[in-house]
Length: 307
Image 1: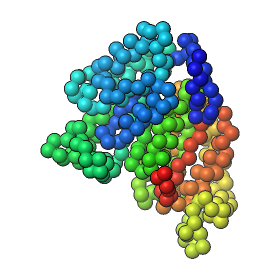
Image 2: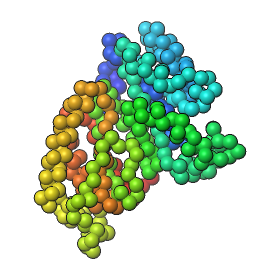
Image 3: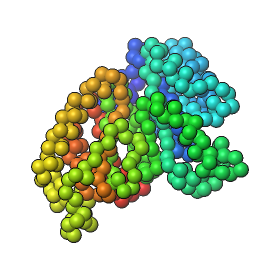
Image 4: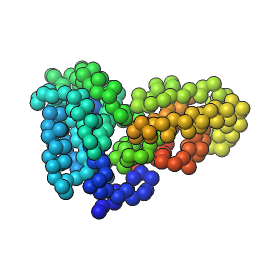
């Protein structure tokens, strides 16, 4: 039997008695569905790109009917498949979720309009549903048409602010997460740059004293010890951390019992450089020993390397 490594590094043995998995990846054109599929392929999934929704159930049936068939499937289904071949993805997902021995997940990949427009300009590829080259209108129409699917998604990934390295890491974490564990992502951000769209819960720490107004601390970040000490030494910060840690300790086992595989917590301050970074790093430290949790940290608004 083959060992498949989960994000935490443990080898997970597969066997005929285990649940099989099917992951459906959908979302906006140009948002990164192909990159997501590549991560699942690297994680040992049997992958099919741009499979029409009407054929997904038949594909799963074909795999299920083979004694030595693959146990992990990932398919990309986008708006073109529904448009050309008919069939609603919503109905397919409902059918998959009542199948015995199959664990199904829906991942929705999106990005903001300027990011998608820029990607199509840089790649010089046509948007698949744009008429007369009007990419912005096509993006807005596609977002509107796919809104019901976004609401059904187990996880939403907004790729707008992710560097190529962060994008690879995010999809790799999703691909290697597995039943019985919860992938928890902690994201710091600045409200002045807009709240992230792909969070399950959002916490606002702008009530804490702002190191930005200290000239000695302004050029530093929440990674630096003077800023960290300034943020975490306040009584409000200590109580906030204790209450948040208690909330997450309450939620994690209940999410696991409900079958949730991914959870993203956003922590925001004004600029996303000082308070939210320090709080996220401290939360990560406190949650690092939490059983059955694979922990990931991202600081959206800090300078980063694309390497």
